[in-house]
Length: 86
Length: 410
Image (tube, rainbow over all chains, first blue to last red):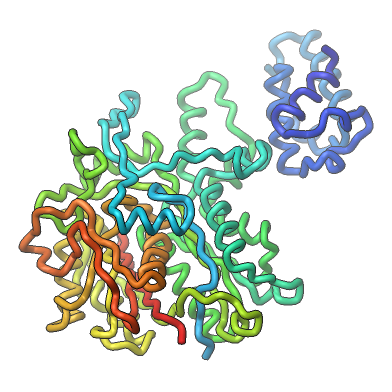
């Protein structure tokens, strides 16, 4: 499964978002996920991928695309330095 | 001064999740108390509790439910009932004169306990990021004001067992003195977690589990009473000024005509008849009623040894020679002690007693106690005479006493 597919699965499962509308460039606002719900979403995404999203990066996420890119970067860092942020 | 009217009610309780089934449970003495198996990890012995079989998914999306403590979920469901009942049609320009006054004792106890369990009991220590805003004691009032766009005063009152009675009373004052025109009021509580139950158990005020009939473990004013039974739930009312309610042709349940609030100033846990009496007399003065004009009193009646005896003494002092004509009951025998929600739940019981002209009984009262010699309606309720008002007593740990009076609106 791609990163997008796994994030889409979380959005559908945890936030009851319609999967069909989740595309790379859609904003969380358009999905009906407000700032507080996004914090919960990032918490779940961290568990899903075994990563930790730094608060400074979290602030910049507004769309699915932002989140997918960030998750891929953090996963690549984790593979390069296993066990680092954990 | 404005008269203050009750135009909507909602309840989420161990004895029914709508006002009709709630009141029929009280009248028929159908108990919502059950056996809790205890929790060895918390050294919690089996005990009676009044819990609600509540399915959050029927009322909230998963996203919403995850951000609402259990007591806030109860609160919103009760408020939605009350708003559907009253249909107050608050227009955008009325919002600044619409308030929310809400009571809770321990607020987000459920969320806090989950958080501590996660920190202490799991290796990952993955604390949920919204723990603070979910657990805070004003979360219910805040969520109500957000859901219904109420832009006037928002107050959260935490005064243990009298929290929601005080919330109702303070809103009554704000409407009476013209500060606002409409208010959503009430209270909610959800503290049946292992840690909180254990804390109550070690305090030594909880009822012993009746081994053969757990549902009868709470027996107020009975010689065999052994303590209170903790419950959970919420109750909400819509209060409106007489001008507003009449202008829109609202259905009116009752007039909220009296509120008394007085402190014992004595002791954290031992109740005081003088303080309770001051609160009852203050409520009578506020309602401009004489004691003999009260037909039914919903007692605080928690079923602790000392509490019931002290309240009996206080009622006898206030009502004097006419006390034997007064119908009194404690409905906690069947719905348990809802703590921060207790005052609102029991005030609704009083309003329903008034509209149904029937005073519900004290369930499980079989052996009268000489220290509680009043007319406590053992197991059988009785008709309420037309024209009589009703009183609800709420007395808290810490010595905060609140008393509400309602009467037929004419």
